[in-house]
Image 1 (cartoon, rainbow, N blue to C red):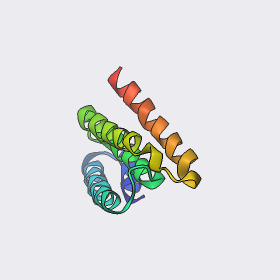
Image 2 (image 1 turned 90 degrees about the vertical axis):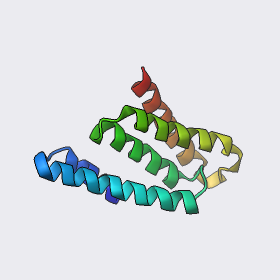
Image 3 (image 1 turned 60 degrees about the vertical axis):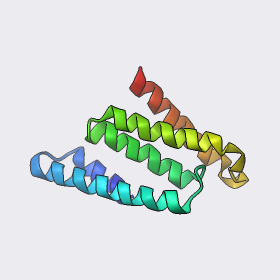
Length: 110
């Protein structure tokens, strides 16, 4: 959520404030991603949501579609590979987020 908070700040700031918020968002997303990769299954909705938001950060804030697509595709592919491991109570959330990731990939690569 910290990364999202700073990403949202980049939407209405300019200059040094914008640069600072973008840097802080990237740092927060990076730290959260490291923690998620270590502690959560590839199909966990929180890990998938983080990958979705981090990829949007790359696309919108960093203006880096290549890294946005790479991150999103990796998260999607990892989850698909482990699709049999989705816990029943997380199935709907996980698959909904996977669809959002897929939608972004389609949009970003067309």
